[in-house]
Length: 105
Image 1 (cartoon, rainbow, N blue to C red):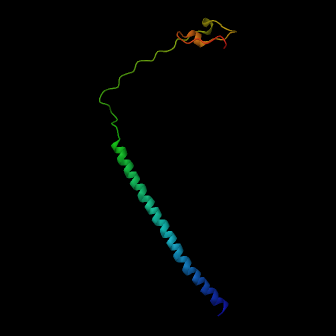
Image 2 (tube, rainbow, N blue to C red):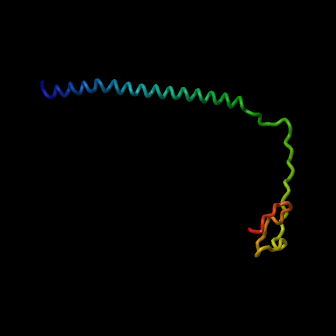
């Protein structure tokens, strides 16, 4: 046999194994994609059902009442507080009922 005929037979053998292998691989990938898509659609449907079941009404049967305003802290100028211990102001000394700390601070 000539070298050209041997080369053609070798290429035919390789292609006869390669083409069905590639076709099988591609068809398996397509089936995997279709299965993933169907699973995703099923999960989306379950989520939609769950969201519809857990939905709350937007409007309330009774009108909302206005909440009272929160009391604001009275602002006192710093000069009115007086100075203690080298000009430091201690907030806990100004608040009635605050625990006193030992003198070692």
